[in-house]
Figure 1: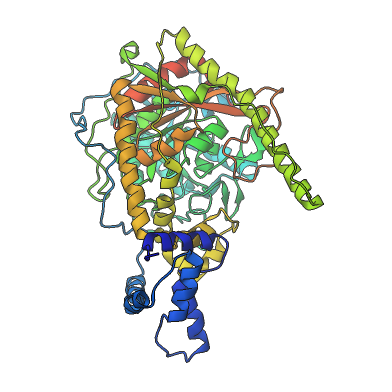
Figure 2: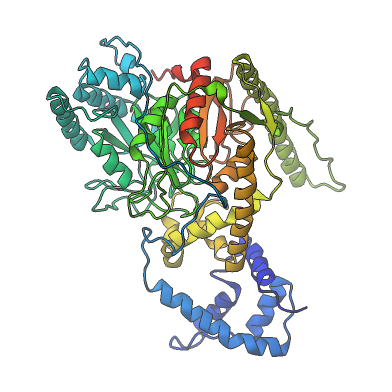
Length: 619
């Protein structure tokens, strides 16, 4: 067999899952050998090391091939060391820019004035819940007409944040001094007749991967608790310019994974025994608990979708490239998206209208228009649905016990069977909510068009995320500081970063080539329809995060007392753990940069169902 470098390194990657080999088979073997030699001995790869590595990879190498390889392999290691000495900070992006648009795609760049809906009439009373759960649109009208002051709203939300943080663990830093100064300035400007727009004087919270000058930006991770930056993130600057009032920096799972951060686990306001899911954990929990008017979250592979579902919020994951990420922690340069988590769809539109557009720093941010029209003729839209997402769950088949099963094996098999049985029962229970969504749309007069995702290996493309993440936090792995992170299990970042070092550069490029096919083929769906209705936790979640299409996540009902109980306790590895009294969601998708059209249709469905008007009882 001739040497296949891709196969060789792929096998090393598989071996790395179950071993401590780092950063690669050959280099680890060489390092071990060097430890027993003189400290000043040069790094050297030997014939024996190549034989061991080849045996591990399942390939054979001839003597002549080994002779050709040895010098090059040692030189390759030298190139690694030269780059590592640069100590690249997280803010430095690679010298390439991901573009989610397929060939020939056109983007609307002509901007028109947004057309907002008419605000509701809200009575202002001494009960803060009358305002705490109001929409941004309604609060904006109260502030504009000076029926309530920005200072009063800010003080109310700060008080609620302090009141409920001990129960929900969603705050990393209160920005109280900054917020009170902003609120007073907003009130003075509005009184003087200088009204900046719908976010003027409205309190909000930021996921703590957004830099805010003068405050820690911890990324939710142990070892970064005191990290600070000298400049605000672009999104923060734009919200400041709109007159919005930042009241808190919210929790995120360490380095944007899950809902466990260095201070604990953020909780779901609907069921505090559960986490709020991640990684926009605090943003979703804070909005759902009525502790801010809106929040900014981020998504790489579900981090707006999942906590919005768990907490019953409305979340918008914009088209990749719509919102600049300057000043935000980088996890994956080709997949990270910033977006709003709110109570209502139009709130998401109000926020996106403020934060979108190029900033001259994030090269992936494209010049495109977000032309919001609350009066859009939604009946002219073609609405599709992912048919397989709404098919009944297939019957459950449990595995038969093997011959000569040991007591330990039996116990483990029965545990797996119980979990699968519980998960299947939940799927069957939740299926009725999916069907109810389709039925509601049909009652509204929507002619649903069945569509399907292209049959592509989306999951096989996701290791590129971990490869980029491992590069983003390379120094953690090399220095050993990854041990400071709270979670250290097989699926957590420290282990994932180590495994990613075995992911070959060739395979990373191949995955991105497959991703190009996905972009082209998924985009063809939106030549047939304008909006697609989908289950939130189906294959579309991975597919559309890879292709950069926008997603709107809407609350879609609440499980009753008859709902199956979760299979086990919440360990942050189940995005939809379920259980009685917890929210469900539905997701709407659209073509690239069709976010305004997506939200306009989503608003109509939301107004027809009104699930977003319900809120948890926290006392």
